[in-house]
Structures are given as C-alpha cells and as structure tokens.
Amino acid sequence: MESILAQGAEAIIYSDNHTVTKDRPEKTYRHPKIDRKLRKSRTRRESKILEKLQAADIPAPHLISMDDKEMKVYMDHIPGKMVKEVIDVLENEKDCVKYTKLCKEIGIKVAAMHNIGIVHHDLTTSNMILHDVEDAVYIIDFGLSFFSDKTEDYAVDLHLLRHALESRHHRIFEKCFEAVVEGYKEKAERADETLKRLETVELRGRNKGKYSSA
Ligand SMILES: Nc1ncnc2c1ncn2[C@@H]1O[C@H](COP(=O)(O)OP(=O)(O)O)[C@@H](O)[C@H]1O
Ligand SMILES: [Mg+2]
Image (tube, rainbow, N blue to C red; front, side):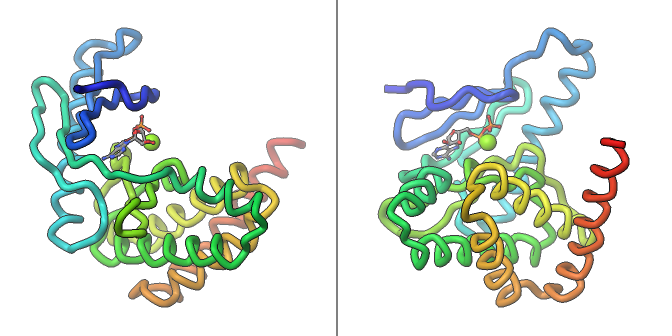
C-alpha cells in the first residue's frame, strides 16, 4: 500500500516500499504559467539525471518512468536510513572511524557525479541514503540538479555540502568535511582545480558575511 514518505517544500513523496512517486503539486502562490513551467522543467531534469546516473552506474534510484503532464517521477525505493541520522548515531557513539569512513564515501560519490558533469546543488545529509543491504551511500533528490562542466559549479556544490555539514553536524563537521575532501581527491578528475576554486568560493562567502553584517 502506498503511503506518504515525506512532504517537502516542492514535492510530496509517496512509497509502497518498492516504488517511490515524487509528485510536484501545483503551487498556487506562483503565477499558473510560471508554476507549470517550473514543475515541468524540474520533473524532466530530475528524470534525465536519474537516467544518466544509472547509465554511469552511480548509486542513485533507478528511474522507472516520468509524467511531465502530471508532474510525477517514478523511481526505485532505496531501503535504508538517511545519512543524517546515521551520522547522528555514530556521533553519539563517538565512532569517529565510522563517520569519517562514511564521509569519505560521500566525497567519492560526489566526485563520480562531477566526473560525468552533474551538479547536485542540494547536497545535504538528508539527500543521501545509506542502503540497508549494500551498505553504500545513495544520493537522491535531483530536483535542483543540472548539467555543467564548470569548475565553479563543482566548487559551489562542495561549498553547499560543507555548509550543510556545518549546520547539521556542527561538532564534528570539520573532520567530516576533511574526509569528504579525501574521498573527492581520490576520485575526481579535476580535484585540484575544484578544491582550489573552493577556497575562492569560501572566501567570497566569508567576505559577504562580513559586509552584510556591517
Ligand atoms: N528513492 C527513494 N527511496 C527512498 N526514500 C526516498 C526516495 N526518494 C525520496 N525519499 C525520501 O523522501 C525524502 C524527500 O525526498 P526528496 O527527493 O529529498 O524531496 P524534497 O525535494 O522534498 O527534499 C527524502 O529525504 C527521503 O527520506
Ligand atoms: Mg530532499
């Protein structure tokens, strides 16, 4: 039987434990034409990205089908726990070895995505599932993702991930991000230039904070 798994800002997620339906309902506060255009493009983009990930053998839900009239994406249900919750448990257990290992794997998965020109743009530990059986990290939620070969876009992706780790796993985020970078360096084809650009992106972020609080 199908039940609601989650209700986010943009979508309602239904699941029957095999198939997940991501439904983007109408947003009445938007102009109807703009709303339709936005929901349609996000539905199409998300399904295209799922297809490309599957073709490259990167762990993500497989696309079953999509409907850009009803604004629905049908995909495999990934059995597992949200990485955010897994890290919380490991942090409580003070199991630094396990959570850094997990974060290194995240870095490897992000690198694999960047290597095929996909920028996720919403990398948080809520958008990652640790698969129950395979014990592998699956990245989900490609609603804001896009294709790009720009180093800047890859660096911003890492910056957003760093920021998400800082706000959700505050006490251990530095160790976590170091492990992410270690994994990223191992796998990303353009690791050096992307990590160098990340320094510029971080600096820009800090300066902006300084000016806006002045
Ligand atoms: N394929 C999937 N398998 C298992 N759970 C999923 C799947 N897709 C989404 N979920 C669950 O639903 C939640 C919200 O889905 P997500 O795609 O992140 O949408 P939103 O844009 O609302 O954040 C996720 O955090 C996850 O718990
Ligand atoms: Mg999400």
